[in-house]
Image 1 (spheres, rainbow, N blue to C red):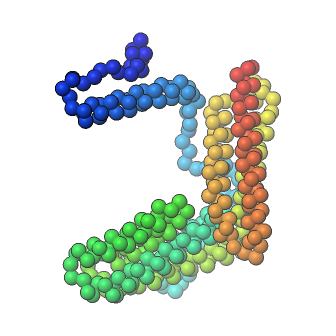
Image 2: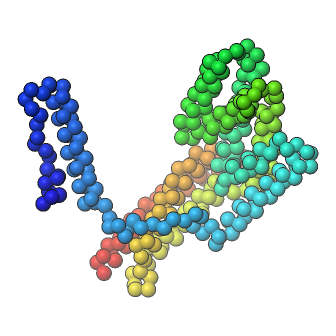
Image 3: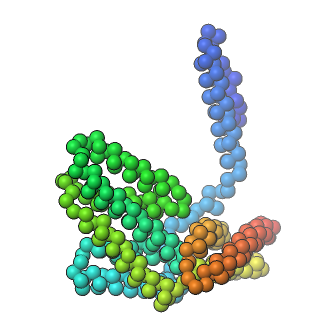
Length: 320
């Protein structure tokens, strides 16, 4: 009775002497309140029971320690970082430590995604470093107040933030802002050196060259290879759902939820890899791009079959 009374729209009104402006505001608030109550009641009716949403937190991805791909990826990443560390230690140039950071931050699962992030990183470092050097050499000698400094910083920050709003090139904006602040504002004293911008660009370049040799020449992982593995995982999950339902192989709610989340994660990853496929440069770039498009449609079709089979599986279990 209490819930039924709360779901009913209120009939209270303001006193007659209230102004028309306050009456309009009151009517609008009542409408918002009634809509919120209706939406809340609909959600309570449609949401699944609490035990169906009980998910376990996992620090690592599924099959992180059971597949050889993870071990090969770790070996490639470690080898690239060790080569960069050996080079800058041998030439006694610790300022290009950015090469190791570049390896750790841009070592992604496929060569296309890796090259995309590396291109954004080197472009952002170059643009931000150029802006920092120009500000330090041309503007700082003619500035005598904090107001002019704030104007320059705000303009560059606005440029970096505007680029960061892009869903695809946000990493470029981050690198522009970071390189500019590292060059123009390294501390609380007057800037006297422009070497941070140079060292950062050289370090990023060294890291990209080492990763190009390890990830793209020795052990390449093309975007189409990642699509093939995604297709196999989704197809394997669909076959599991098509097996006859018995007491021995009856899947629990948590297992079904984990399978659904994994397939949804694969689809989200698919959208990012479709853009990364354009950056998988090479001699067979056009062929690789066409192959990725064809595999992308197959992955989406296989995901649709998985969701259909899951719906049928739940119906069979409920009927049983």
